[in-house]
Image (cartoon, rainbow, N blue to C red; front, side):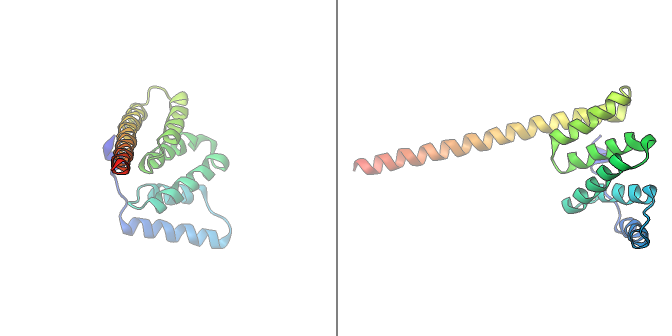
Length: 149
């Protein structure tokens, strides 16, 4: 599953789909397929701002797009949210996907990856908070010791 999370779009592909999307925007009629392809490229970007834009476009498609494609939208929403480290959102999207298609191996693997990353980030967060608390208590102790002098 890590491979899909580390799959990056080429600058050429991104530019091509971006141009097509903006041409259709100027005409006032964006084909859902064009929006999906552009959003898919953005989700595969190296840059968080692009990924965020891709997620927004996918969310729009999910709410207003093709009903048959909702499963694909959910999957890429989960991928984008995972890449942005928004694990609770990613988990919500992948669980919705698995509700519709519970035997999908790729989605099951993504769910496991999301849970693993949530756990790892949670441990890092606790370590940072613990380290900060230790530093503060050390400074308080030092302040008390200096005040007694």
